[in-house]
Length: 176
Figure (cartoon, rainbow, N blue to C red):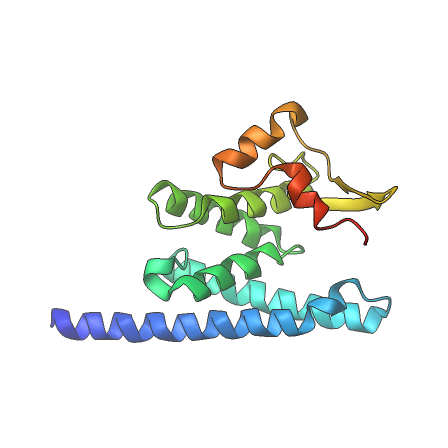
């Protein structure tokens, strides 16, 4: 009986993993539409991320956070990406952040990924971000983050969760 239940659980996790990886691939194929000047293209992106956010919400309600141990590294990363892009579904981002917090505490999820999601959620809720991962604009050729709490200790907080110093991170965003 236990072996049958384990086989069913393994099959279910494989199905979840495949679905999450598929959503990440679809997200990547359409990401350029997010900031398109064409409003119809932006609408395609919004519908896609909403559909993915809805599905992730269902998965989280039934299975909890899709950890690497449960669904594999690629699918766990995909779940994080879907949550990260659920900008118009704050309930999904809040639930994902809460479940990821528990998973990070038990060593089952990435503290770095959680920091990015927490910052994204803070910006979406109009709060200051902790880790400076969300860039609001580029001014005078320099990336400008959304407001951050206690900016003097930003790199210290970033280091604790495995994120490179702010200046190194933002160098990637600078126009070339």
